[in-house]
Length: 59
Image (cartoon, rainbow, N blue to C red; front, side, top):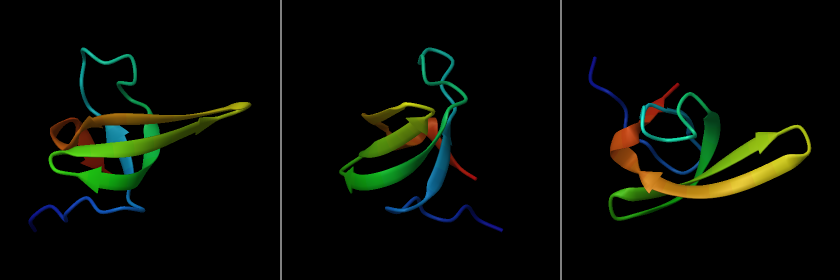
């Protein structure tokens, strides 16, 4: 079965060993070109980070 496209609202995990966000789970907020804005929430903080779609894996 082919991978489904990553769309806004998709839950993703970061798969990039060079990123400090490697292994973090978040929600895609918007997509622009080959990059996605991903919202990470944790305890008492929220962070919106833009990263390449190639480093994201849908879960």
